[in-house]
Structure formats: structure tokens, C-alpha cells
Amino acid sequence: YAFNKSHSTCYAWIAYQTAYCKAHYPAEYMAAVLSNNMNDIKQVTFFMEECKRMGLEVLGPDVNESFRKFTVNDQGAVRFGMGAVKGVGANAVKTIVENREDGPYRSVFDLAKRIDLRAANKKAFESLALAGGFDSFMATHRAQYFKDEGDGITFLEKAVKYGAKFQENENSAQVSLFGEASEVQIPEPVVPPCEEWGTMEKLRREKEVVGIYISGHPLDDFKLEMDNFCNGKISDFNNLEMHLNRELTIGGVISDVQHRVSKNGKGWAAFTVEDFDESFEFRMFGEEYLKFRHFLIPNSFVHMRVFIREGWTNRETGKKGDPRMQFNNFMQLQDVMETFSKKLTINLDLQEVQGDRIEQLRETLFNHRGDHNLHFYVFEPKEKIALQMPSRKKKVKISSALLNELKAQRFSFKLN
Image (tube, rainbow, N blue to C red):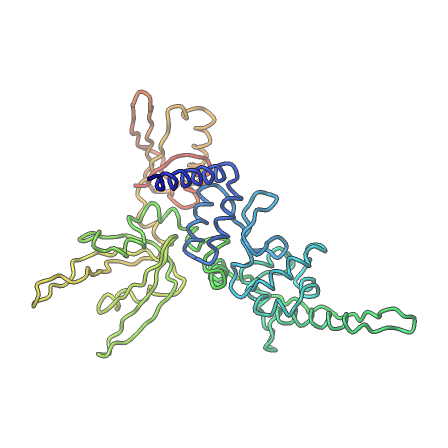
């Protein structure tokens, strides 16, 4: 009986081909994998993270470069497929791609004039604007497309109507006395001035139409706090049995809050917190709600300490219920670095202790003077020799700016 051997051979051959493609054509391989999973948001998120790990740049959708599926551009970056944007149908993508062959679109007006507006409706325009599909039009930013100047019509709607009117005049084929088509000049709508959306607002709206954050993550600015002052992740709350009698310290952004009142007239809340990988809905009652409810604000960044207790024991059966959560503390994630940072230790390989390298480090630390303790850990890996050296005179101000600068200069460090 050799059927199992036949299967093994085929799977081994496929595994070899897959590994070869991923090793030698990483961008093309990941674009194909993303395209194959573009209707599954969790899988897309997973493979986007894999792209980051591989050092591949993933760019958002762009009407001048994207196709329906994920592709690789001339610079070797993976370009998001327009077909993965909610509200943008296959026909809308088709007319955008086909008319792009006559040259790149110069503006949203140029786009509206050239494509089939029966295939790409107002909803498709709105979804593309929210997802960043028009970001290559440098004269406008995302907030302007949705600006209403008091007449109840957004600028994007005016742009679409302008394109429809232009095409209507083109198709009317008005002929002059000399047999030439007369071109009626239709003025383009004025782009309304307004402030750009903040990072959080832009990412939130981006996620509405794509399902994930493309151009960044709300927590990107707090990665150092998450790495150094959190001992858990949101995903840990999916299996509380594994963390009984332990305090989990997590950071995240509050994506949804519902303040409610029980039948007894007491307030409680259901709120969702998400980190880089997962989201979880928490529920808070009683004194904990009264104590921490002022932290429960949508789009705010929080640092939480949650103790996992054993569940209540059923008096009749003697069985314990599901583990329960005790909220010990809430803090704004912006305050974590200053509150918890006590000591900065710079790790130095003995080979790094050279003139230029040390001068670079000295200058960086000098520019960030403060009140936090500074230590040096010098080691020689071959001889397995290490030396701890606290600085007696020099102190630093531990901040994201300093730590990011040290990371950019490839200095290894440890907090506390």
C-alpha cells in the first residue's frame, strides 16, 4: 500500500516549492498569500505582521497603483488590493484599472471624469478615500473629502457630481456650425480648507472600510511602554485558567465603551480594549466601576493591572465557577514611562567600547540629562566576563525620545 507515500511525496514537493518562493521571491509570495486570504481579516492581519517581520513594506490601496488583489510594485513593496476595501466592487476596480492605462489620475476630479461612474458609485469613492486610495493626490487630504461647508453635501459628493456632469456634456456631442464638437467648460468644485484628521481618527476610519490598520497602528507610539512595562497581552484573557492568582499588566487602546445601568440602578460598563494582536470585551461593576469609569473613553490609551482570581464556589455543587477579574489599577499609557522608569542600563559588548562609538553614546546621553539612574553592563561573550558599572555622577531622563534614539543607533538597553 503506497497511497500514504504518494501523499508524503506531494506534500514534501509543495513544501519545497513554497519555501523556495518565500526565500527567493518574498514580496511576490506574500502578495499571493494575502490575495488568497483577503476576505479573512484575521488572516490578513497575521500575514501583514509576517511581512513586517520579513522586512517587507506593505502600502495601502492607491488608485494609481493598486489592482483588485495584492500586488508588488516597482520598488518591491506589497501594494494593498482595492478588492479588499469594503464598498469597492469588482466593477469599480475594473473601470479604475482600465482607464488608468491612459495615464495616472492627477486628482479626484480627473478620476471622476475618466471612469465609469455607474460602476464606481459614491460609496466606492468614500471607501477609497477613507482607506487612503486618494493619498497620492497631494493637493488634498482625507478630511477634505468629507468636509461639508453647510450645504449638506460633502466635497467628495461634489467631485462625483462634477465628473457625472462632465461626462454628460461629453456624451451630448453638441456640434457647432463648423462641425466641431463644442466643449463646455465646467469649473471644478473648490477644495474646502480644513484641518487634517489626527492619527487616531485617520486610523479608526481606515479600519472601518478595511477591517485592519494599514498605514500604522494607534499603539505604534507606545511600543516601548508595551514591551517594557506589560507582562501580558490581550489574548491572555481568552484563557484565564492559565493565569489564576496572577496579576496581568497590559496596555491597549479602548475601541468601544458602553456605560449601562443595572435593574438595581447601579452603573456598570462593557468596554473593548485592543492591542497589536487581539481585542477583548471587559465588564466592570460596583466600586471598580465608580473608581475607574473616568478612564473608559473611546480611543484613549490605557495601562491596566488586572488580577485573575478563582471563580466563586457553588454552594450546592461545590464546583468553582469561571475565573473572575479584579481591576487593580488604570493609568493613561502616556504616563507609564515617566511613572515606572527608575533605571536605564546600557548593554555594551567589549568590542563596542571604542572611541567613535562611545563618543556617540556620550553625546546622546548628554542630550537627555535628567534624574533617572544610569548603569552600564559591559560583557565579553567569548571569555564570559561581565561587569556592572553604575554611573555615579551622570543621570538621564528616560523618555521615548531617548530610547528610540538608542534603538536607531543600535545600542542595546534594559529598563529597571
